[in-house]
Length: 447
Image (tube, helix red, strand yellow):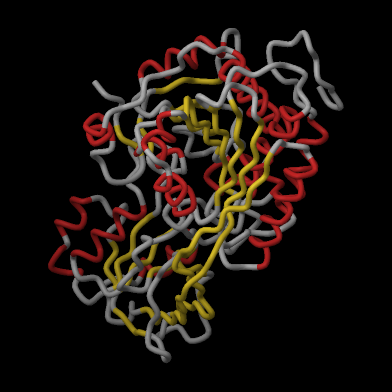
């Protein structure tokens, strides 16, 4: 479909693959788009400019206040191995060490499951805990933040997470929006092996030096609108454009941002009537605890929330040829998606599993039917595993995967916007509370 155009007889939008790929590369060119950096600001300006140029009926820049954070120095060394230093990245909101650093004994908890913390509890207080990170998109994974909280509760003096994927690249992520009371860093699998080799020995100490600053900050959410219905309800397509302080944040989430931007551009010129209004949202501060979308969701009145018929979140939509629609416990929504997909290739799965690891979670929290499109579900060896690392670069993504994500999203959008029929029932607060009874990552499908 390269170079394709709009097809009035088609049941859904036809993706212009060349334009999609150029948009993806444009976004990657801003670098990691870490919150508070020039790359993030330039990406926001680019998105706003592109939305305005697309001719949407209304474009809005919506500012979000948050606690900013930056790390000016991050080092992990072995005092007894002069000259050796790990390749290391700080976790967002990590606390600082004293200016001359901290020298700590270590305890290796392997995976860092709850039973590992229970079994070694007497060894943890005052030491640096070493744990593996896990593939983010498997239902059985233990979320990094849960391990951080376990370390904190057990009295650890620091947390070191090890990237399980080889290649010499450290892992990163965030601690929690409230901030961390201890320094927390990520290192590579190879450097982790060196540190773990000496864990528990007298010579197995590490020296950590993190110099961080926090302060008031602002980020931009970008909204574009097409008024197609009678104003009674609307469909929202969203993606986060911020990333981490490494690589190009290509998989996570230039992929979803590019697809959402291109679909908004095509919809603005689509010669079809809509039964519902359409909005495209680009959020920032997602990687720091979903703060951008939370601010928006919290701003909605009950009536405004009730008029959102569907929210579709695109986050990590390339890196594997396998796509999954996560329906977050809305059984009727899963049925609607299956019907809307029709003859879509079987590689596009539909799951009722609940996920609270991206911006759709803030819609679910308000009882709004919400989907997340995700590549690589339960595929730890897929390229999706490069996210949250310096290896998350544009060469990890290929155009057929990106175009497939755009095509399947276009199919659902077309159905949601053109068909005035019901999509899914909103959840009551009690139902939402039961859905979101777990803390991080993935929860089970209801029932």
